[in-house]
Length: 374
Image (cartoon, rainbow, N blue to C red):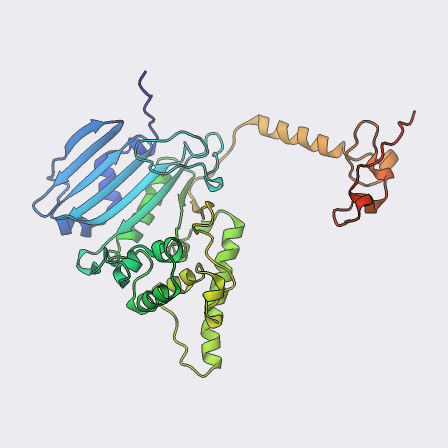
């Protein structure tokens, strides 16, 4: 039995409109593609509909599986663009789509309320004239920037790490930035994606920043952190970076602001063993996304107001409130909140016996069952 193909509102937007609105004109100019005159080669296989445009200089490929729309562009054999929008309707389930390469069962990928439409974006672009050398040569600065995980977690060695880290710090490239982003391409995509999704009825647009510098990029474009603990980590890092500049000034050094890439490397430094971080370079906290956990940082922007439209929500709240209120028994326990069980009224026990801080054997033993009162 064939699997039913999903079809989100996002996936129903015509390919020509997706390209004309989401992709910056410089990408088309670079590969010599005119959407007005171009004819795409269209195919469908394994639940994915593909539209490929070819020119003498490069090609552009759009793939759509009903949940995720993925757009990629190449100049010759060099990748210069990879951007995507993914409807979040499958988040929090064990279901997937052909173009969703990673599971979305992380706590930050919670199941969305019924009728709530959200889509997650991703954007990468590479200026082909700025690609680094040595991307495949281990222990080179190019390889370090292309894959810092290899040096931070997989094969950490203090001497090797600091040798290439110090070079990357002054090179002007952020982690994973093997080439500079194409001018205006990322900002254009993020802004246009929000406008498009709002028009077709989405309530929210989401982003999952892998590193601090990516979160800062989305912050400048009006995104907010979905979860408070991630915002606290971000603000803690900001305070630490500001304090770093202040300490330099107090020591009589010329306190020049750090570049964004330098901030990113200083934040990345916090992921090596703490005892190896120079005292003057320690920040109050580390960026939450590491290989020591699977909890993703999520940011979002509200697009359209959402109304649950379910009377059951208010009924559920009223029922829950009544159950909570019933936990109080003013006739016997005064204003204390207690949970009564058959034959046991906890408010007759001494306070110390039920205190979480009590450590004596008597305090942690089983409570005596009180006689039922007639």
